[in-house]
Length: 246
Length: 226
Image (cartoon, rainbow over all chains, first blue to last red; front, side, top):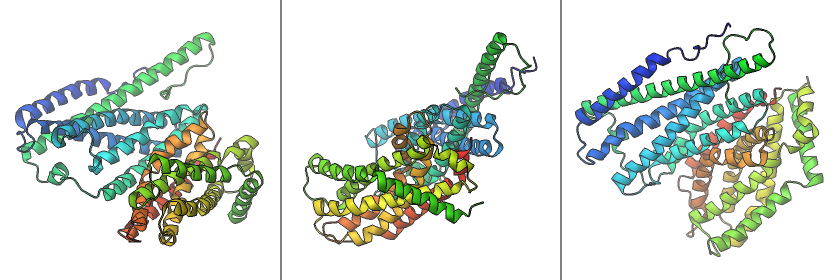
């Protein structure tokens, strides 16, 4: 067989070792190295989880959009799979960011949801849009058309993200004290270091999950192909099979 | 190659003629809008509206009425093989997008000519807000038509077409609705028409129109391939 079964699994092993190591370092930095914030106390530690989740998820959406452009231009189904998996993992991250954001809001402002916080609201709208990616994609039967339409969706949604942030930010009549966004430059060095570490490990986890999902999908596709080949033996399977998004 | 202008006029003329003869979308949209006003009157338990409440009722109604028209925009193409005809015809395919956007803008303007005066009669104390409102309506129509045409052309080729348009379109037009309601709100204040940040919001509307018109024009080719 000319198929290398580990094609999409390549690099998965070092990644899956590096990710827990990075998280172990980050978590020990968060709990033992970074100082307790004066205003919010221990609760502020959720900052190291919430903000990296949100940033990674937004970057993931943009990466998904870039893969979608590549898919439309080169007409290669692999890019569609990359785009799908990027968006898929980012939607899960966005879920996590919304939940941690809600917990943080309850802890520091006393409400589970705060409409005056433009970043949180924009994030919810972006999440709602990307949540429609799945029903949209799977309502289209024809495979090629499904891939093409999903790419068009990913490009449109990618362009929508900055526009949405602009409109929501402008509509916030009462801008909440933005402790963290404005303090970004003024963060103490130890906090900044911890924050950068948590972004790096969150991005590493994202990459690992994307890789994992891709190799799982490609293995699934190969299995299906092999089953079909057993039923009706024909020519040799082509190498470098695109992972199936189904 | 037929020049784009001829093709544009032909497709737009076909759409308008078909709508005039069958009256499939427009009466439904207008009726829906008027009924929604009645429901808002009882839902909010108000006999007159002003400020943000007036802007919200007007734009929510117009948006949902527009979804009805957007849902049906490509149904004839799909059922009668119009997509194949466009693919066979020696024309630039993006013309279909611009012609459909133009048709949808005309539908929306027609809807607003009926619904907005009725809204003013039902809920507003004076008609002073209406002249500046025209600008907001026009800019919002362009954005709504661009995004709507793009989504409609994709949804019509799917299994769940009536479901997909509202599902995907609503989050997509949230920025448009933010800008449109924010521009409308100061026009409908009880104390009279004011123009608080009116220009800024018109610019946001214009930006939205520009982005979605360009985006639709750029990606529409891929939607017609087969």
